[in-house]
Image (tube, rainbow, N blue to C red; front, side, top):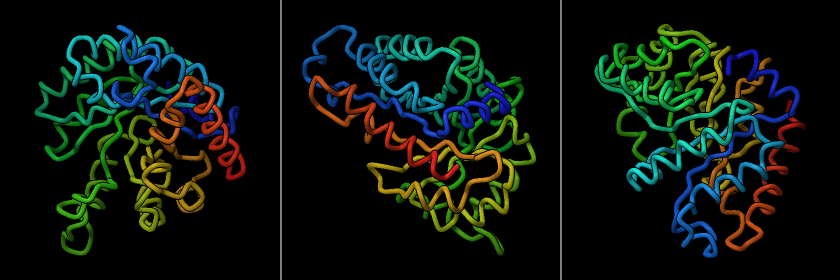
Length: 266
């Protein structure tokens, strides 16, 4: 999905919601857990219930890779089930020397039909550029994250700027707003105004709304640009809205609430 298509989806649905399919077998409803296709069955029900309210799905690959071949197969079936109507993100946080990154890019953009992948920029340009070589695909680079450890490196000063600011400025020159996004955690709302000054045109993938306590209102006020420029992710708040057989109905209700609030900000 290219930038124009993404923007059209946002406008037509009046939503910039990304649903995170961080599916943990131990947390899905008990009546599903013993099924051999438990993960896929759960994901399909969540997708069917939320399609009309969101414009993207983010699959955190760790939850699938932890299950070995069965988990990888579940991830593959899930991304194919989503199809091309929504932006699909592999939250894989890859990034290695150039020839290795080329293989990661091939894995997620060719063997699997993801539209986007999250990438760690620590190893520099040659670890990121192989992902950027694909047309109509997105590389989503970690910018300012919401975890406690962000203070160890991202929030350290380099001369007169934070390390994360240097990362944003530098990486933005490797691609363009049509193939580069940046991860900015919702719990770092105070930083959004300055980040938007650094990156006026790029999209931000914003995790941390919902279970982690980020404010959708505050993020929207501080970080939205004329094209919206935001993909706000909610995972646990939606997919685990209920532990009972009505889990899909409850997921739809929460996703609808997010969509209605987002419509008021667009």
